[in-house]
Image 1 (cartoon, rainbow, N blue to C red):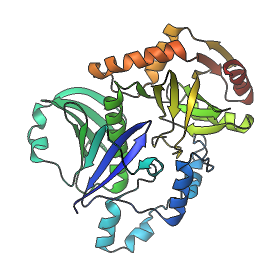
Image 2 (cartoon, one colour):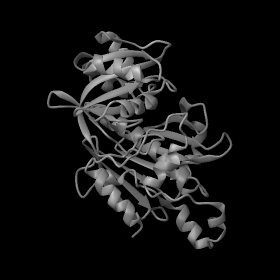
Image 3 (cartoon, rainbow, N blue to C red):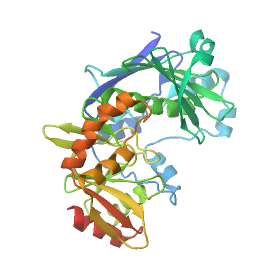
Length: 359
């Protein structure tokens, strides 16, 4: 069989991922299978946030998940066939808690063995839409005929691969470049899945938000702000000083409007913090963080809340059709979920000031 296929239910929507040989899903260890069962049930397995000043937590979290690091010493002992197998085995551990046996997928993404000739042949004709990211790794968005194309670069000289979506975004294909290993491919595949998820679900009352989410008393509190503001730090402080609070996701939770209320879902996309819990809770509050020498909090008016939330939505803003589909959901968030601005220091008092205002 030349193709492996799996279904995942993320934020209430089923998606399908297919891998064309030689790409494969990496086999989980017995320890990881047991952990996945716990994460599928929404259990907290002890994963901690990874703020900028606590990078050592990365290796601690990896150890909890049973992830092994490939070292040069180990690599040098492997034969060519084993190296090739390792290079093409994609570690889908973060998606495993969301795997389902059946369902109608809203979109399919296929990882292909090689890129079609037309991608390179037509490249000079692409109309550039935007440089999506101007720090490594770079990626650029283009349009060509009825296709949306992303060009991923490891450096400005080395290409990682291409991601191509059709007109309605329900079919996507990722083409890794030759000699690009599984870790880089998985990183770009995650990006592709997030982009496709955002595009396809934009009209389905669903948002992918750049935020850290802490649950307390069964309700989700979303902390967001510009990069480096301290979202992960603030979540960690809640866990340190508010007994009974737990981390749902640390980078890209999903917010969906269902049955008259907004629900917040954990997702496979949690940034540096490997928090992959299949968990859901009603939204309690959105809190925009800002670094400040004193701890102050104020409730935002709906228009201010709208401006704050739209800035945190994970999407490609040059696509006006997608943005127009997202606007009604963002408006409803601003009108129905309390939104606050917390100017704060990274300390216990900031948590108490926040907690007293939003609960």
